[in-house]
Amino acid sequence: MTPTPEHIILSRPDSIGDVMLTLPLAGLLKQRFPGVRITFIGRGYTAPVLRCCSHVDQVLTLEDLMAGDAVAILSDLHADALVHVFPHRTVARWAKAAGVPVRIGTSHRWWHWTTCTHRVAFSRRRSPLHEAQLNTKLLHPLGLEGVPSLAQLSERTGFSAPPHSVLPADLAPTAVRTVILHPGSQGSAVEWGLDNFAALMRRLHTLGIRTVVTGTASEAERYHPHLPWSAPLAIDAGGRLSLEQLVALIGSADGLVAASTGPLHIAAACGIRAVGLFAPRRPIHPGRWAPIGRDAHALVHDPDCATCRAGRPCDCITRIAPERVAALLEGLPAH
Image 1 (spheres, helix red, strand yellow):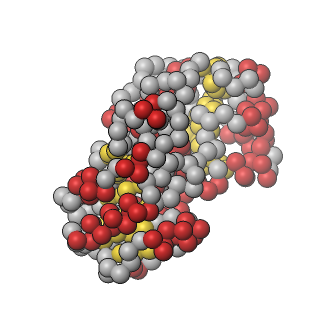
Image 2 (cartoon, one colour):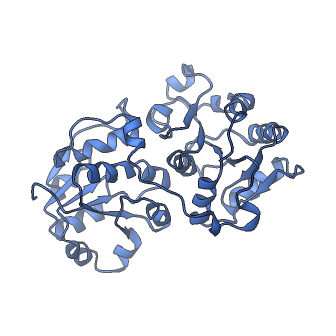
Image 3 (spheres, helix red, strand yellow):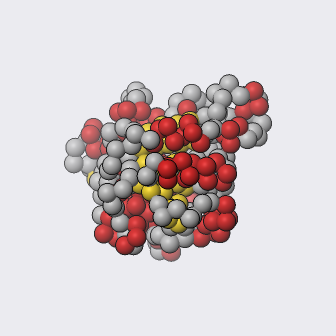
């Protein structure tokens, strides 16, 4: 690799939250190597999120690579390096066949021993570091040593939401403070519970705060019968929005409440008040997955929960009081 790389590929064909916590790598690389071109390999459904990052110059989807001649596509990029932030065996084979000079991966995947030129040894499960900090270890072979603070990483996301003009009329910003509630997690996190979200909605409505509930169509079918919709300040956006529109909605809101999900990390990157609800059990605890941003918060019921400490499934997240969450939102200034 030349002393100053001109083109680096970051590969994380993974979920939205994981992608959001990888974006600071692009910012760090741009800071260290001004003028470097960053291509990001992600899954098709995360592409709208990646296009919101000013540090990403090109988005390649895993689906497009699989549908075409992936080796030729990668070869034509003439990249100096490819970083496997998320290990994917097929992508690793493609990168080697394409002749990318520097290929970096974790030493904990056996196929990286045959496909990568550099292997970094660290354990995500056992480490006390945040996921975004762990990602930076894969940049060490490129000369970016040390572990940045979470504040430093939050300043390097380069993320901005699409304009609110893409939103349906009833979801456009108003003078009324707006908090997004995202009850579901599609199985990616332990959930807070619909009774808690219902209690929070009622409390926020008494404060004059508009609530917009988001989720997939199937999640909306599950939560709709359990939430209070009689107040004029309650809006159900479940199943109505594309990912681009969801990001625009988050960017135009004043706050968001969710478990450890993609929307939580999007809210943190947008700079709105992001309130994350967590269990303290490893490896899903907030020390690893808390949102990072200037107004991001992570709540647990009991950081010393014995059941969580033993690594057993636990519902202590459901005992985070709605009043505690509301207290973080009561003095919320209008966006």
